[in-house]
Amino acid sequence: MNRTKEVPGRIVCKNVTSGYRKKTILKDVSLTFLPGKTTVILGENGSGKTTLLKTMAGLLPYSGSITIDGAEIKDLSYKQRAARISLLSQMNSMYFSYTVRQTVLLARYRFHKGLFVQETEEDRKAAAQAMEKFDIYDIREERTSELSGGQLQRVYLAQLFAQDADCLFLDEPTNHLDMRYRVLLEREIRETGKTVIAVYHDLRDAVKVADELVLIKNGCILETGPQEQILRSKNLNVTFDMDVVL
Ligand code: ADP
Image (cartoon, rainbow, N blue to C red; front, side, top):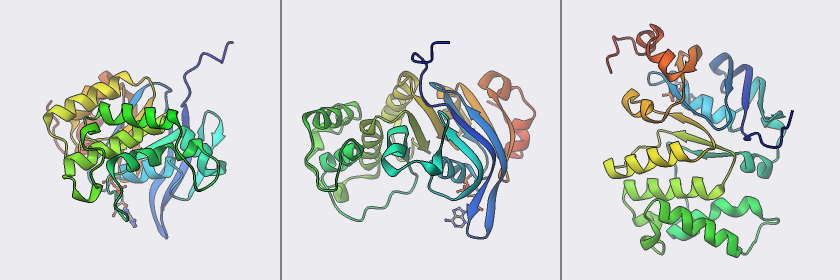
């Protein structure tokens, strides 16, 4: 078998339990995310979607096993993890006010050794491309503290793409985006060719990008499979506690 041509980014969760301090949220979750595919995690508020993304990104302690292309997430160094996963969180707090350009460039630090680094031409190119992609190149010298919510979300999206990791984790990526940028983001997700795992609260947005859907309720996986299968499943109604009509 020729493995060199395989797309990277196969994530396998086996019997994963995780949560916060003494509060267990995810219970015995086993899931496989296919490389190069887009999987959307669906569930009500508080069902554990964000917790699942954070756990897979190595940000929360867990029991069980989470591997990415065979490597256990918690055994990876910060840089090794950054090469494999980039995460767009829902709540980004700004501690420092950088310019848009500096913020996007932060995503490139995984390519450098040491703490105080000078960006390379390649970093500048990757950042410029990502800024152009999300239409923020013209505001690159503005301070992030002075941007609108929608502009800031596009800065974070540019950062996510500039990092060029194997897998993109997106928590409610359309937050604050108006229609034009939602459509642009949908296209980027469909065309990226990377493994994408996204959390959406609106099923109508989810179906535009998802190859696979995962239904989660109270920290447990109800069902997972190709979009067409899940949209026909009775578990969709169970997930949302209502008759779902698309
Ligand atoms: P979802 O993304 O599906 O809305 P979350 O994963 O954010 O759900 O939350 C699942 C549960 O975990 C909720 O009961 C929530 O209150 C709890 N939770 C989320 N974040 C924290 C935290 N930092 N500390 C303690 N509990 C948390």
